[in-house]
Image (cartoon, rainbow, N blue to C red; front, side):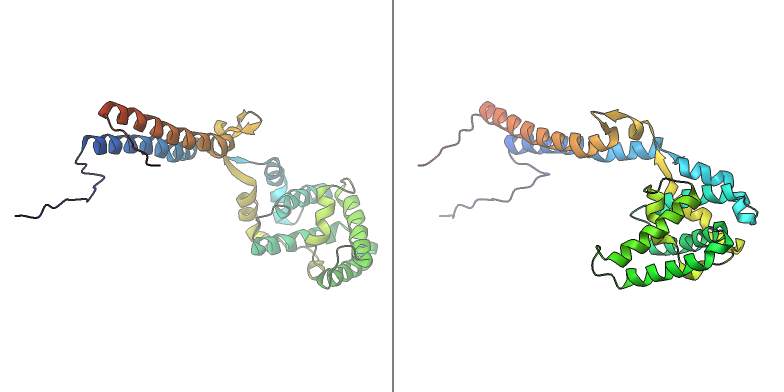
Length: 254
């Protein structure tokens, strides 16, 4: 008598029963909907996006030829410094790019300082750098006093509010080692740095607001999550319907 054998191997791509076939087709359809919704949207963004400069980049472009030639006026230097601080204030700027831009900012700021103020300001900046290097408590009186004094001078030179972002940033971006006359040769890396951080790919999908959010953010952070839950619910719903149609009944043992 031959021993009865059973093949329990299940193949997703070669279903052996009607239920398995229906389940495979349903899973593939839902997977395609999910893939098109996720990757299709990103491909669409790449197709329609256009490089769009920030206002700071537009301002930088207007004064850059004068800065590069070393013939910039006081106002042109001020515009460039404010544009540069828009880059230096970004969280994801690389240390190399920051150091190169800091050198240019420091030298231009040095030239904007009245000559009689330069020795005292450089000394104060050196003291601040030393205090910052040894800092263990942000409430340190010397550290905060020096920072405030540099910030007040910077706000006056840049013609900005005393507690503006530019004035708050400048004490951390000025380098005492670079407080010397400006050299146009230092500017070779500046165009690439400014374009890298101030030009972004945008389209109507990123500019359009939906429920208070940029549409691309709402789509990826909210809609796709809701869609995934909806697809899971639909899979369960369709599976129950198929089970009823095929007469498949689950038996629970207590």
